[in-house]
Amino acid sequence: MLPGIWTSYALFLAVLIPLAAVGQVFGSLIRIIWKVVLPFAVSVFLIQGFLWTGGTPILHLGPISLKQEGLEFALTSSGRILIVVGTFIWFTLTTRPDTLMTSLAQRGFPAKLAYTIVATIQIVPRFQARAAAILDAQRARGLETEGSFRKRVKAIVPLVVPLILSSLVDVEERALAIEARGFSHPGVKTSLVEIPEAGWEKFARWTLLLAAAAMIGFRVWFEFSR
Amino acid sequence: MIRLDRVTYTYPGTSKPALRDVSLLIPEGQFCAVIGPNNAGKSTLAYAMAGFIPHFYRGALAGSVTVDGKDMRQTPLHELVLSVGLIMQNPFNQVSGTKFTVREEIAFGLENLGVPREKMVERVEEAMALVGIGDLAGRSPLALSGGQMQRVAIAAILAMQPKVLVLDEPTSQLDPIGSKEVFSVVSALVAERKTTVVMIEHKLEWVAEFADRVVALKGGEIIADGEAGRVLGEDPRVIEAVGQTRYSKAGLRARQEGLWPAGGRLPVTLEEAVEGFQEVRRMTEGGGRRMGID
Image 1 (cartoon, rainbow over the protein chains, first blue to last red):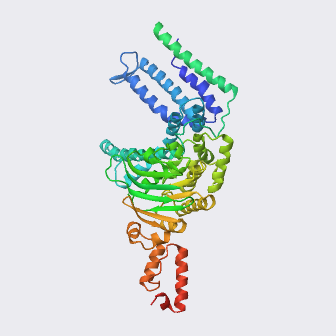
Image 2: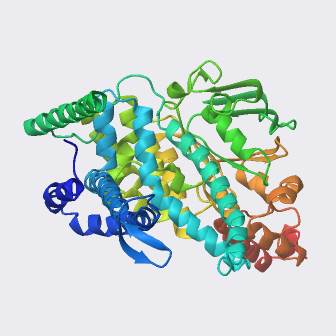
Image 3: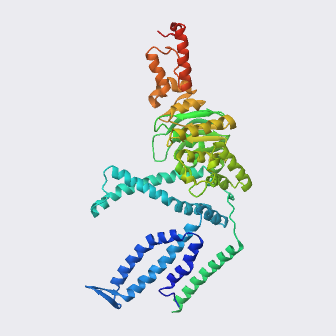
């Protein structure tokens, strides 16, 4: 009754890949998934495959052995992560954050919360650039960021502290700047960009919402009926 | 337009006031520059004029601040932003971070105020034309140069049509071309729209050229207030606090060399220096002693 090992992979290939192709983000999606999901999948396969308690050994490597049940578990977990992370990446690659914010706010979502979510997504590249600049600046001052494990751990504090402090200063300035632009103004907010919505989009949204609710309901029922 | 009456302000968690007994009256349509060394209280003065003190920074505020007839204590910040616009140092921190084009970025404030779309389009286009960034309308606000980004920040505030513009070191992170762009836009606003401008600035040559009035702060107190030539020329307290323009330095050296009238006012702008030296040449050709030049 529950999804099998390959269900997530089938969903990925049959639904997410065509959607990425339609959204013209296939290349970007695969690149990001490769970087994000692959390290996780490898570690899950190694840990679950070799450290599974009991189970059926299928390969012996000296004192340790690869277990079939561990591999199955790793495959299932990696598949689920692939579909969850993949869907989220596809969503961020195909949806403009400002459109998302406006849509959310227009549907009654608190404007401040919508802003926080979107600004957080948008700030990531800036945060990365700042981290790189601090790394370069500290290296120029003689900080050793490579070498032994001890040296690397010692380098964390001089890198993380300026990053956090400067980001806090930025947050204060940014808060001032958006307040200066009437962010706390009460009443209905308007939008320069008109967000068109075809009838089928509304239908799709409600169908997905109902499908999600039905799946949660089924899962709860299944757990309790065992 | 702006009235500060015996304003003393201390930030939360500190004991030393950042502003001490400051009184100031800035009439409508004046371009007032505020100069001073670090920790003089310049930014604090800007925040007080824009209502961020006491609404954003709590602390202890004594005295009163009135802008466009609105008492800062009694008026909520979201209402004050309709009268006063604040532009800050870092252009990168002034973009909303949620918009994809310059046009949409400029509309952010209007969206918050609930301005109808047709009106918003009109005001955005007008603000862009005013600061000369029409050609940037479709570009990402995050992919601009510092000077362009600062002009976008100014346009975004101007679209909200405030009567007063407070700029806190808007050129500190800009190159000379970017600085000139900002000063030109601001002085055009004063000349053409009668906008009241308070600009905190370190670049004394620009201040001398563009500002109607200069207020010098030190240790949270006003140490000089008046026309640029008078404040920046020879006031020893101002010279000690912020230095002189390169033209005043040249005039002073010329005076020491006997090439400038002993009692003559030192120049603060390039034009004043050129005019002064031309005058000196005419006078020396016609008998320098009449001007007190040996």
